[in-house]
Length: 353
Length: 107
Image (cartoon, rainbow over all chains, first blue to last red; front, top):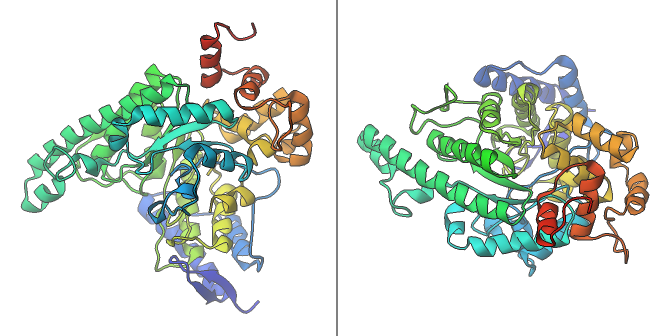
């Protein structure tokens, strides 16, 4: 074996020697360990990953008996939406697309969601959204989630009513930026609770808060507070999927359950998500496009392995475009996608993807 | 991308017992516990849960919905009402159906 064909984090093919692949696996794991203060992968795990990448087969998978449960963010938009959701523009309704995922793609669960996929715009048309969920519930068997993003940015000017922290912070108006974020958080939380309760009323199985904390710690706090209220007042199963591997501290002084939210890594995020009452957690590890896929997969599985280890609720890691070791490319190549998928199960020890 | 994950790692949805294991994860059960719970209720091994050959026959026998379009087999809410009974869990949409028709579980 002189060369191994794999890919960079941007999706382009790269040839590497076995020693280069081994070195990248070690370096990727060490990078995660250094940043997150988590253990590096064990020697046997690095050997397993090397064999995964050295195998010349195009498609790889988990060992029989190790299969996991699939949930999906972005809902069925993938089929009927446009490029903005990596959609292929099929002339299908959401309800039809849901059935395709159940009966043709054999998914274990699926979501209904609005094409914009944010809670704020859904609020005004929630009756339509709840109708879509009802129709899916009547005709299908797999659990039905409603999914959307907190999308905190929509609550600041020019899209929302509050001063924009991104304008205030560069001017040194720290206190004003923090105040604006707390006002945004309150409205964002109320919208998430309002929409989710409408879905609970029609019998949805679950709600998925996707791309959580995309705008940092205040958005994370708003989501945790929404989870807390919904866990105590509805029968919804609640999934919290993250936006990035580390919570950014745009506010910087926010706590939940006595723990500072800014700077949290996946194994720390899951503990506050559990405390809030969520049922499933989706950690994210970002892909570095300038590094190889072996480096990115080793790094992602190092983070997620520790998250799975400390979790008490099921872990459904994000392994899509640009996360979980998958290249940041609109159409992730199946050879590295299936390797990232298998690695996240066998090394990351996840309960689902 | 979704199909690649389904092939590489997924349980298989209603081709197998993927939807049933998912329902137990929605109750905070981790993968092993959820699989063992479902396997116990179905009286099969954990290994069988993702075996479409085993589960295709068993799902029709239990009448909890099958992947192919078989006239007369339970569909949608019919299948979920039977799954709720089989797994001994509440399913929100089934609970709502029973409420609408003035029934309680088991009546």
